[in-house]
Length: 125
Length: 110
Image (tube, rainbow over all chains, first blue to last red; front, side, top):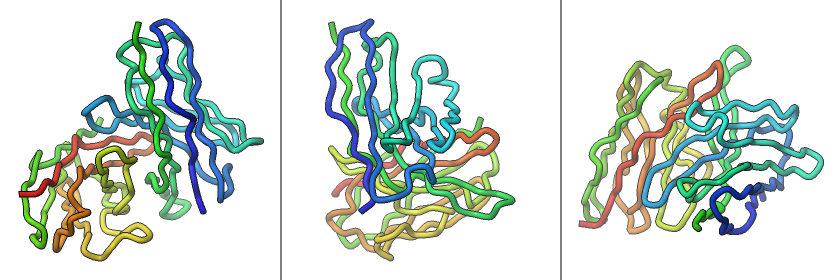
């Protein structure tokens, strides 16, 4: 079974650092990009960025560039999302999602076919 | 940057009724690049439709997607109790890859 297993809920104080994880299983981890998606309480979905685990190439939404870092360790099939200094406004649910590719070599497109269950991050003094 | 608008914001229907959800893009989108997701309370989103009209694995055929250009539609032919949820459309843009979600349409029980 294809799964993305995310790390558990976190409660942190403003200014603290944090890294959450997303472990893939049941498929070739390096064959699919991984995205991170934020959902603030009671709000919609926001794409944060993605990583290609085969070479760790990343790109970010302009809204999140410079605020978070996405990384991956392909030896353990795990992607990460990290903050160096959390803010109260980082309080949210964070999902990782596998990006499946379709189309042809001329024009691929991507969609999020498998999702993790989410990691709740609460930042409060 | 392409902006997605979904309407209506909330759709109140009864089980057995037909649901028609709209997703409009601020500029033309390749139909291949449009996907739909369902999210129930307390759960992660689930892929329903990709490439505007292809159902994901395991998705019942009462769900269908259509559209092109700037206007896309998700149709649920006969609502089942488990279909009451929030539905998001999402657009993929290339070079570099970017993903944009619409604000969502909530389908609730009338």
